[in-house]
Length: 292
Image (cartoon, rainbow, N blue to C red; front, side, top):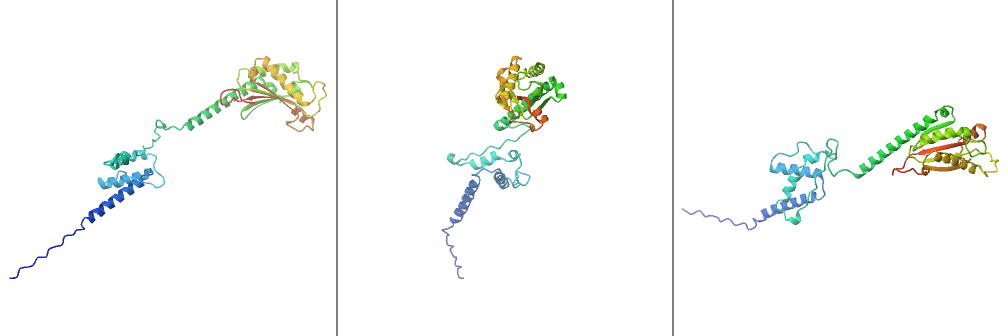
């Protein structure tokens, strides 16, 4: 009986190429992952976390799908950053370790986490608070002035109004001064004294403005309506100072005929333009006197 001839199988000397190729593929995938996380993105971390958890544990870490373009605010609670960091850094040389960012804090119970407050928020809050205090102060000034001049306000001889960051007291010059005269009439002194007493407790700056009509001055004392208007405002300021108002708070401005309220073509218009305006200004942001 003839003996069956056995064929010797040839040894494959290139079998190492298969595991080597697998190793290169894994290394390529590893470095692709490392490159993808070089720019921090919380969404990528969640995707990577789910993939690694599914691979090693079989179930995803996050129970809900990842939204695109609208990440949840409480992502720091859902994202296992420390676990991902431990997976990547295990066995890596120290010089290759890349620190991962800390999870952003969330607002809980209406308060920010320590160290996360924006200084600009505090500055804006301070400005809003200062403005509220300034407006409250001006409202108090307006109430005091309106109280002491109530009779003249009802007679339409005095107008008190709050305009922006100031309170304006407009007094007809005809009840304060004779024609062409800068000294207050005796009957006007009680009015100005009551007004000064109402302003004395407040720290606000006070500017007194004098205005005239366009009728040329016929007095040998004043050469123009400008000088007359400034002299009248100065007389009011002097009386305020003598009554106890801090002189550092006071300022004088003479506008003459150049800021009329009405046209000077009628007696009514000229009467409205002859006036003294006392402006009580809101205090500056630094707590000092407001600039005129």
